[in-house]
Length: 339
Image (cartoon, rainbow, N blue to C red; front, side):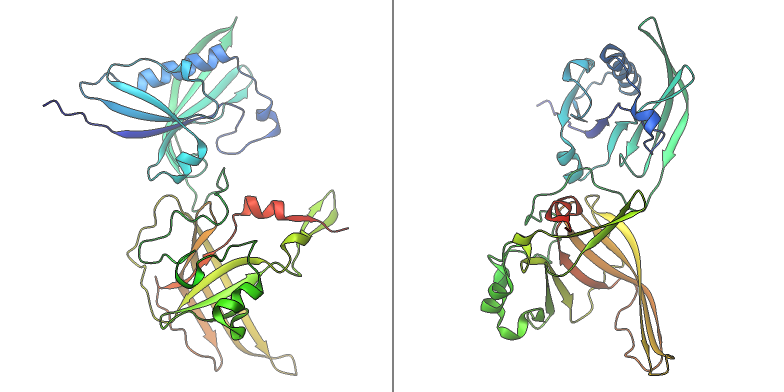
């Protein structure tokens, strides 16, 4: 029996202007004819992927590319994927960087990694003369970051990337509770009057609830501060649900899937006496792993205490909290400018 081997490679191809990882006003105005884009795609893909004896499937992002542009290469099948499918996938991707222009020479990259974060690949230059393309290889390219911004927002009240053994949302006591829908009264019906904000979930976990209320966000536009508040229909509704472990869960050797972006955070708390002198202080550094749906895992890195305060119970790599929140892109739509 003839075996069919399927290797999954993902390619994101994007063509409007970029300056090696950062967009600029100038680069965003770059326009390249479709026939030239097609030729760039065809030549670089033919250069990168040679005919094979066994079947290989290569997945391409649907953004910025037409299926008719794809070359025919023996035993290679190209398939298009959406941004959502790429961000939810378990593999890194091949992608074209957006093109830049300096004088009469354009630059473009073809790389492997996370499209708006860490990657390594090849840089190419090209010129367009009388609607004809001249394309040539220049050098290697690369980039690195510890966290990235997701292109797309995950569906509200959906958490497909929960880690095995740590799945709580819409299960057990939380069955039926929804962010932006359920209220304090709904929480009290399930957990009792002592659990409006937080209480014991079971012998292993504590649970905390936060609600849309008298909170606001500010931004500055043209030296003018603009304040945003929650839309009235969300006031009093659940904004996030957090689980805090009562015992240690070590994540020191755990590698989070690529669906999560890694952020580094630090928090400091101080207490002062009536004379204004600091009496105690607590500092904590931790990593936050977050996906595009708003699921967060906070992992302890380091910390310090000053004065007579309870010593930290965590060690490096211990889980601090699990939080079910709203993705930033969706939450932005839930605030309006204060009148």
